[in-house]
Amino acid sequence: MGTAVAAPVTVGGVTWDPDYLLDFASSSVQMHQIFEGDGSVRGYGIISTINGRSQQQFCDACEMTIVFKDYRPTGSSGNTVTYSGGVVEIYMNTGESTINPNDPLTMNDNNVGRGTLWLSLVGHEYNGATLRGTIYSQRPPNLSGLGQLDVVGGVAAAYFDTDLQVGGADLAFSASFTQPYPGTTNHVIGTGNFYGVSAVPEPATYLMLGMGLLAVGGLRRRKA
Image 1 (tube, rainbow, N blue to C red):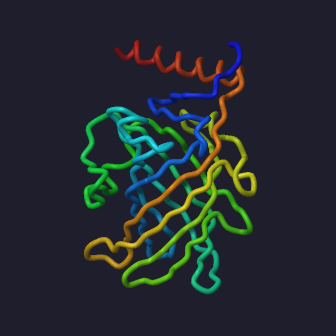
Image 2 (cartoon, one colour):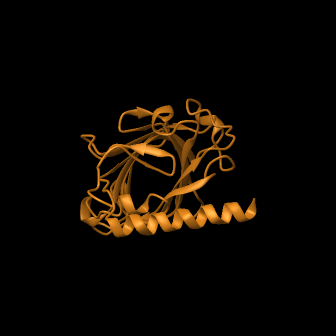
């Protein structure tokens, strides 16, 4: 297939530039985090920028949403809580949407996580935790989180399974929550970011990806 070209790269309808100085840096303008009764955390969000480009530029006529869950508390030190586990899924949706990226109250459990599974990730343990959450105040909320992730699936998996983040993780993320969700004490709103180094797959991986796309195309023709 010849020499791999670094940029731009489009996978599953999403375009980014591995030669961008920050490589893969995505910012989620809106994120929700919910504390369950057992202390575990889950939530969802929508990605608004990648490599400094707006949603209309990196993914025209689509939206990218995030769903995370299964982060379980394992201990605390001062105002910092450590967590284990964690599942994070990033979806690309070209269908109808009811989310306004500028209004966090338009996002809920029912309108996120739609479309194609773009990246599937699990928490990567580093220094005994997959996530560290720090509570600066509760009323009003002022919370932050830092964690690591490993790629386990999704149509863009081959580009991000790099082991180049802290402790051999594939992606790192951070989050900050400073708004309470109306009428609740266990639901907060804020912002989040993913950081990673992407790589163009080797030719053999390209061949496998191509075979998978051909198979999907064949299934669609048969259904038609």
